[in-house]
Image (tube, rainbow, N blue to C red; front, side):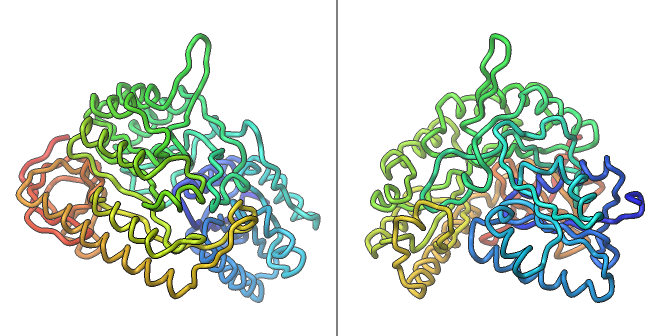
Length: 446
């Protein structure tokens, strides 16, 4: 009976994957299944996968081997693979390595109850067909591992930018946007449930567009609708593409205090040679012009980025161009990785992965070291300021401290008072590390 079946789900990769796992939980809860945090008690294990880097796939394969070993105690254990690895690895993992009973791609989650029924009757259970219109707009996600304060909302799916290193267009399909009214309604519902911050998710949120009777709603208009719907709900978003971030969007963020002053703007490389090979559709100069406009319209806005070290044909001069751009921008934070060739990408088909691994490691180390200095410098500028922070929970380092984030997405740790998670407090910053602000609460507001 479904009512007695417990599901354990393990998620890898981006915020979108975590959002998808919450959609999966909603669909299967509605069908009568239960969820558990204890893998040993699970009857069904799902792993929601990421293909963006080789390391992520290797971790998943190791976990699948472990899950298979659990069948020694539970021969009826069902193991399923979800997400971005599904279509490309289904034959190897299911038919050759016999690690899986079920495979479902990112657009097949509505079919999971039927796929589980197939497994129960001994049939193959595979659905990796990509959709032209699936957005799961009508599904209210079950918030897994939630702190009750912050939540993700997917506003669109897929991508059509076709960066040469990126597997997302082939694993998540065509770009399509979700009904704007359902997004606004989901935000209102979260506020009523006690949440005070949402992050709007999309592979390129700047491309969001929803057409309704007599009106076209782009991302700037969507942000305005959400900001006006509840001024006490903080709004973040990820990710922006440099070629699409508009002055209109920046001016909208400037108008509303609850639109967080933090923009994630992946550059990937500071070299025009690399940007062209990556098919990023902007130049170094165009990227820096967008940074200049952000600084003008949104003074004090935090800017974070993604950087790839050692992409195909990268020279030492290309690498130096990246370091110089990092210094010019002065990023507050960055996600930094060495290039990992992915199947089903333009780079894998047409460009040689010819930068030695030890060179990639060295360049990545230089990028990380520089960013740590930039992050520390950015945080040191906050010392002495009083900032508004939304309390998210108890610090991992001490039960006597809370942690939360500023509008600029900087994490702060401070001594607990009578305030509670979900409340806004004013904190005076007294110290910092490269990653965390340190401070003391001086007052609070509901």
